[in-house]
Length: 82
Image (cartoon, rainbow, N blue to C red):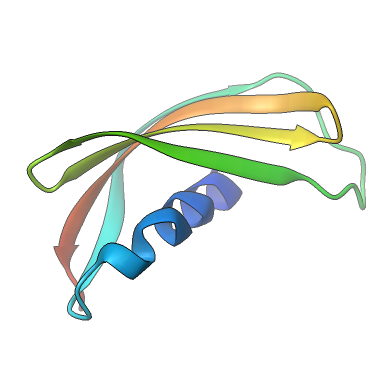
């Protein structure tokens, strides 16, 4: 679930980054509420909630149909790409 959320947060801001930039996670607060079934299609919704210098704060939720499977607060930093 963490990987899905982190990818969603990256995709939310990727078009805003310079070509020599990327984001890396430095803090996560995740609540896994309900398991998904094998083969279930899940959706991650990520919302950028705050920007302070190079630090981005996101609120996210993962759901299957109308069921919320988990919620998260993620903190990513914009850094030079390798």
